Image 1 (cartoon, rainbow, N blue to C red):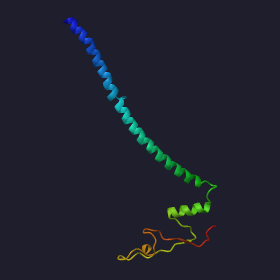
Image 2: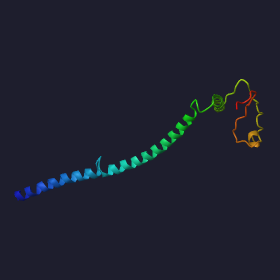
Image 3: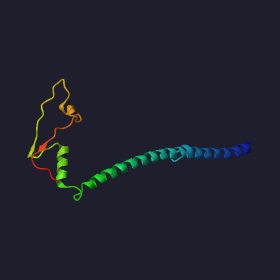
Image 4: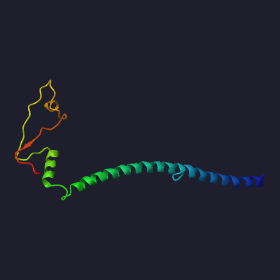
Length: 128
């Protein structure tokens, strides 16, 4: 009986150790399941990297277009004033009357998009 018990204990112990390693090879932190999860994250991050690189390329081309040799100073000044809603001291600003409560805004009646800013006329001639 003892001899038979000793003959079963060693294979049973080796089977338990093998089962432990197989379980960790599948479900462990570096197992097959974890690798699948990591590959899915890698695919998502690769797609995100592609879109970020496209945005970076677009912005880089816009920055390159603003180099000192590519754009005139007066064009840059005009664009900055339009974006910041500023005017030159020589510009003439014409205030518009407030819209009537029951009518559409005058800008919408004239065919311009809603929320459009009033045009600023300049006394000085524009550069060519």
